[in-house]
Image (cartoon, rainbow, N blue to C red; front, side):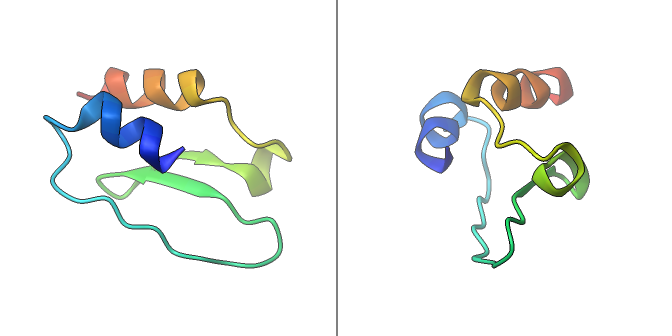
Length: 58
């Protein structure tokens, strides 16, 4: 996922931080706004879903 996001948004990304965790936690934030939480949905997101969420905020 990180590789996909860097390829899609390399012109727009100032920083990308990966934080390892346990227990199925997978969250994505853009400018401190939570755009996806696996803990909330119970599912791992599709790359295109996250890509669109980010595009909506650019």
